[in-house]
Length: 154
Image 1 (tube, one colour):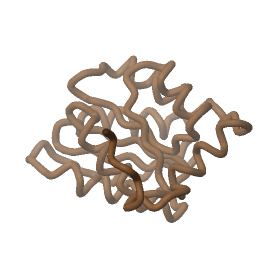
Image 2: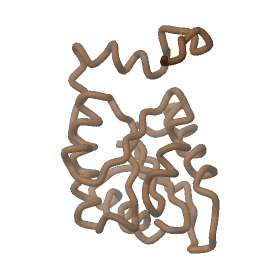
Image 3: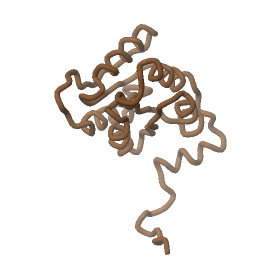
């Protein structure tokens, strides 16, 4: 599988370990950076990862930052990408099975290498269930309404 992986400075060590492990498993890995512990802005790497997924260069993506939250938010700005912040295998499974996630985000300051590998393994091994979930996934990229016409809550 072609997998793109990106991180900010808080997650370079975890990214390097995961990239090496994925290559050992036979995956093609595109390491999009960063490659040092010097402070960088996570959105730059999230946007880069999202673009690679959106254009089909990679089949799946893994975004990493200190918490996983910031990079997941930047990745999800691209409507062709569905990135789920996960911290254990069940979330990774449901993200794939129900939401057809093509990317996961992990928090390097919140998760160890063994749990990260368990999440990635589940993410890569789980198929999208389709069926009733498909119409919901379709709405993520193509909302069926004009957001300007939504009535405010009373």
